[in-house]
Length: 111
Image 1 (tube, rainbow, N blue to C red):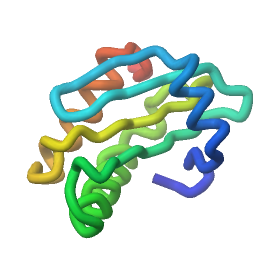
Image 2 (cartoon, helix red, strand yellow):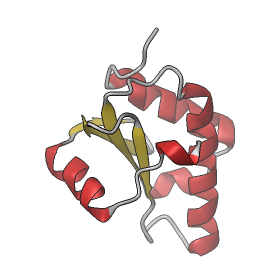
Image 3 (cartoon, rainbow, N blue to C red):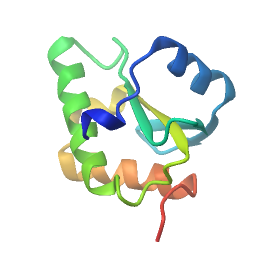
């Protein structure tokens, strides 16, 4: 995921949590809210997922899973992907499927 697409500010995360629409997959939750800044994606991986090594691995996997989808994602929204603890042991292929399923279920992918 390119740095220009990253959601960084705490206020932006709070806005998405407060106003966002929820869509879930088995191992993650996708929140989406309208954006004036264009496409922004934030990752939330809590300590329930595991130690620092496991959390950083999950964040790397999520970024890699989002990379091929950035051209197809609806760019009028800010997104927050919340990882559930079950995602920690999954390989990249499964994480990619989960991310694609969450965006598809939310109807945020362009065909």
